[in-house]
Length: 208
Ligand code: GAR
Image (cartoon, rainbow, N blue to C red):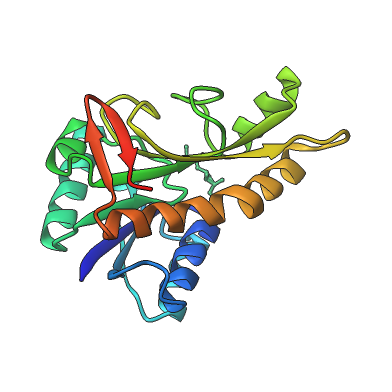
């Protein structure tokens, strides 16, 4: 069994996609054993509880700085014995203590085709606002390993999504989630659990 810990901050639709995939037997031998939220009122916590998954709140506001918060997170993840850590709409940037403790064992879903519309400040709806401002005709989602560089780690999977005339950030966000994020995140987790992702010279190679 691969022990999966999911980090959340908000609605948790990506967490739900993972829970549903696990129920269908589509996470290989992966099992979600803990959901950690940076916000006490995140709806994602209800999704976890409804599915009898252990939850923990590590409120960012209760720690003096990012280093103290990252230390608490690293301790939590080690204590949980995480084989894989998944950022599913987790909106806090952790420092190097965490990604160094779990090299190529933390993945994040980002709502754009990296290297477009990514990095510090690009999160949630903001990403789609910027894509619409630029007038791109194709956007999408990316699952990548987490490194010290924000949104800069090895890319595991990407899926393109069309931008349509009249899209609002909200409409585009929903389409990117439905057509891309909720598919490629569980798929990447399954590939990880099946040991089908290798990182060579900073590039993720997925076994076909
Ligand atoms: C998702 O679109 C996710 O890709 C994005 O926030 C949303 C969370 O939704 N994450 C980021 O922007 C991280 N940089 P959810 O809570 O319903 O899964």
